[in-house]
Length: 199
Image 1: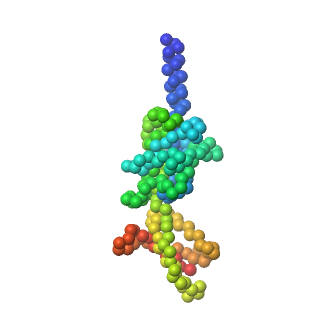
Image 2: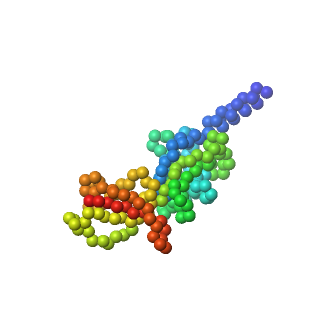
Image 3: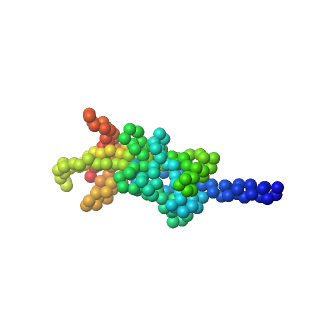
């Protein structure tokens, strides 16, 4: 009788020890951001044995080694997911960003069916925005006569901060300043965003 109780107690301790806890700090990323860091504890298995159920609501789960690869972070406080090739974290073609990327299960072992998240509760790990893109512009500007540069593109709306990098380099607030970010829709085109700069 005592042996049976000890076995059940040992099984309960093993189950608790195998639980994965994810820190619920939601990141804001682009759909083609190269990586996502998931902070937490309990990611004790080898990288090859960690499998996730990770997707946006209503989408199929992203596939390990097809959509992303997993590595451990250097300080041992979680895992890092690296996006592969031309993949995206979320398909935003028919969605309005931001779209939540949800971790709904963690498994140790490819064939495992035991979800190691506490109470099998899903965790929002990131809000996903469209990766910004710029339209080419062959407009001629003059160094002393042109006082504004208009950049047309997508993916700027909703951004808290926009960093622009020019070649040759221009320093923000010295050589130029961002005057406005406004959205507009052109006929027969998808939604676009205009970024206006003043030298």
